[in-house]
Image 1 (cartoon, helix red, strand yellow):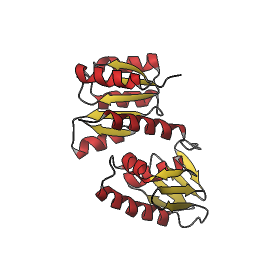
Image 2 (cartoon, helix red, strand yellow):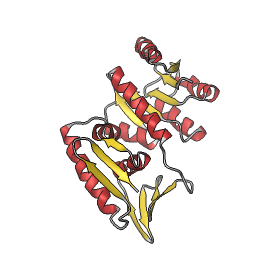
Image 3 (cartoon, one colour):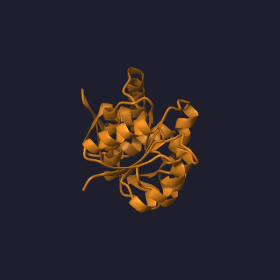
Length: 227
């Protein structure tokens, strides 16, 4: 069965190109151009993933995402937008977005990000108590972005939390460094690559109380998160 995409874009020429290209890759695409119609279409179609433009007539992509998250907190959401302000990106992620792509974008980039969001969803860890997963001796509280062991708690930054969640979702697999960079930072630039080294070191230090947890560096490839 084809992956069903709910694609929302009010630039009809761009929308037609994206829709037809995705369909040639085997996706089933339902396209909407008016923000007011999207949530109803979401309920009717039950898509596997949503791709939302931010600037839409009648209702913004942010408003739509907020309503979708009330109906379904699992379906991946990717924002497509010309907005470039950091505050807009942060707002999108706070509303539950899985990814955020700035216009103009390449179709290959969009397809890779769709596949990545779907893969992460498939490999999501088992949720044990609302928003908490077990990491060996630790508990990772997703919504609060808190890592705890015993009575000790550590508040994680947004990127630390996303990195740990991604590592766990891909546990015991070889994780390509570029995939990790694109998922967390949106690109694999030299600057972000150095940032990743710093963040990996931080996560390792946070998990040092449990020797059964290990982030193994695979030289020239990426990492494995072993439990």
